[in-house]
Length: 503
Ligand code: FAD
Image (cartoon, rainbow, N blue to C red):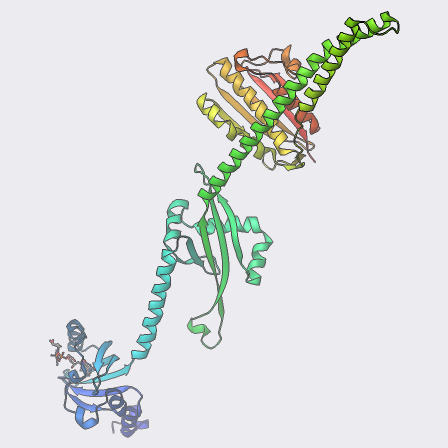
């Protein structure tokens, strides 16, 4: 026994042998040419060879020729440098079955510095490999399904960091910037408020929440977002004995911009049709009311003449002239009644709370073709956080449409160099003020009040304008407890000011 080695003093060599004999690892000792000199029972169990069959053979007895030559060459290159080698080899058992061996070979270097033996230790890792491959296959399958999905899918950890995404999500990165999920989550937090935290706590998630994103100078995009929270067992070593759960958020994002634009186009078309119908009815009402009003004068004179003739007759039966006039008057009154019955009634509209900025934006959209055709530049200055006002949306829309059309007509007719339209809203504590300013010729002082009278128009007869726009606009404003006024701008042009009380 070597007295200088404390291990040898405490652990007898016999114990070393027993340790190797009883080890669960397949252990073999070879000479420098890889001929097996010793193998333990575990080696015999794994390979299927008994000790007599294997001893004296080269370890290559176990080799199955699918292991690439380069693996052995690398292995031997390492061993010849007297360095241990570890790797995976496909081995063949005595019965011909193959298994995957996780092998470590350590050179045993003698006193003269030469490799005298090799120590080989391996275990069968076929099952581990099968499970790993199965997990990998499933992961690949899931990833390809997720990647092929026509919607953006992203998985976030509990710090909202992206840990998995798909092709559609990567496309969004190109379009929206580095982290679309962060942008959309910010908007969702803002729109859902406390509901977001409740959805997370309860695990219910959220479905189909629409988010609008408008980057500086880019057209607005719409996304429908659904989110659900998934819990997973923490797979780190720390959590091996004390299982911990990790929460992930799976977010599905669908670009619905095209759908929204389509819906918007349909809405604007419907609004245009509704306003056109309302204008048609309004026009008919005005024309018929005007005609009735105009006819009423001569009929009143006729009635006075009949009453005079009756008085002259002194109660005698009516002469033929009086009778004819009476008949003409009765006929005329019947015609007036028929005309009154023909005046179409105005459709009732339920009052709601209205965002004037939204209505003005819609009206500007409706007149866009005229703005483009006349090369008019528009300055749109909506007040932020404008209070809602109670009112009838279509009536108010027609009011602003009339003001915008008057402004556009004025700019068109002035044929001036400046072709500008400015529309702005201002919020006051008790009212909202809307200004429509144009760069047209302005309104002569004597017309500022006359402009609101029925049938008054400053426009050429060729435009077939009956001059009811401002009359109706004033009627609508008054119906909402508001006011309209016209004045001239210092630098030229007209300014229409509408004041509407807030709720
Ligand atoms: P071989 O002709 O044996 O060798 C292929 C290449 O390896 C040769 O071209 C040569 O470059 C190099 N090479 C081979 N032997 C030597 C050597 N003695 N010195 C320098 N270079 C050499 N193989 C298995 O397939 N399964 C095992 O479980 C396994 N266990 C091993 C355990 C130990 C301890 C050692 C030392 C080797 C083990 N080997 C094992 C390797 C085995 O000895 C063979 O090298 C290998 O199986 C390839 O065999 P082959 O007949 O295809 O080619």
